[in-house]
Image (cartoon, rainbow, N blue to C red; front, side, top):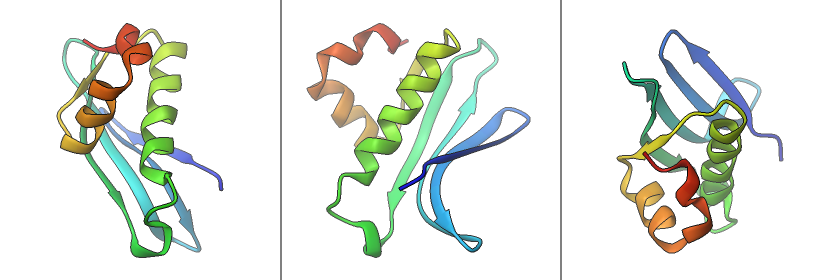
Length: 93
């Protein structure tokens, strides 16, 4: 599975898709203070239960680390993963 990234201006997403159909996505925006704010994570039925949501969050974390960005997980799913994974604390805003 390939996770792709698309960003226009300060809005972006990490996603899994084929033939123009998005099957899973993590939507974010970059706030005025340069933080990545995770707004929403959604996984379609075809990928449900396969850990794709967590992979999307992990990809956002890798991106944040490599670009020295802090994350604000407003999305309840992402927030719950951050709460359960103390080794991600370095990227929390």
